[in-house]
Image (cartoon, rainbow, N blue to C red; front, side, top):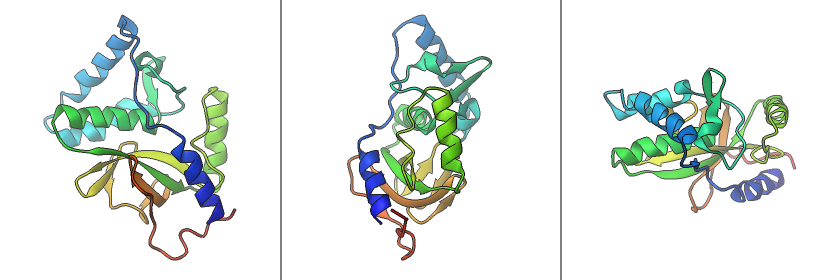
Length: 188
């Protein structure tokens, strides 16, 4: 449990991601393009599901501006970008939500791969703890939305494609832990 607690304290120091704008054409064009494509869908669920398709998952330097998402012929952003864009979709539709964070126990080599990718891009890898990784999510009603995997999930204890949710919390709320007895037994 010691490793998990240390990682959660580290993650508590990471602010939830909010996209910034230079208030110039560079950011305005990217932001307009993103929301023009997302508002073409008939329902909110389809728009939410299209976020990780439109914005490919990858390293971002924080604080990030809209223009920072443009990489050659594609847009790229991490789970924080996905969460902020998804939150904007919900806010535009007046759907109540809250931002949140999850601690994921990933496959053994995933963290090392992600650390190398983020370091190569000269981006912070503070979201990668010693035993778990930080992942931004949204709470809508009594369900959680993973904006990077475009799927609903029940909370702590669930397996996502990127790992098992060992702990989860709404913004500024307490951590809720995986109820399985062995789940919080993470090496120090």
